[in-house]
Image (cartoon, rainbow, N blue to C red; front, side, top):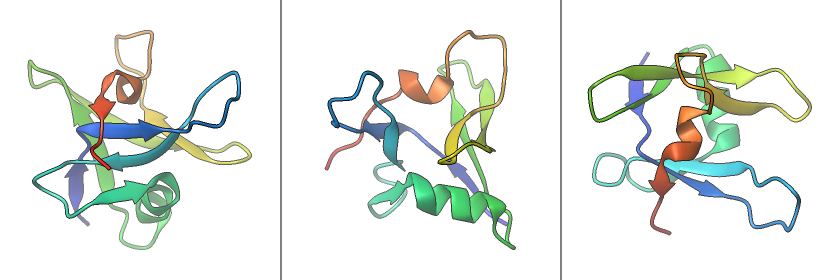
Length: 93
């Protein structure tokens, strides 16, 4: 099991009312980006990898898979109203 810190995201540009996260990354640490489906498979797969975001104060929020159709990722509830992933900057493409 590996523990991955997410520091950036990419959002869909589908013209829908709500954008959704398509890719996550950590430039300089990972080689490239991961799709949300790859992250979901890594979290739910046999190796049970973990993903998280961390704020400037070192507070950690773990990423979870939401069992919806389609499945998506978000941070576990902490003391914020918004999903911590959505506050991250865009990953370089």
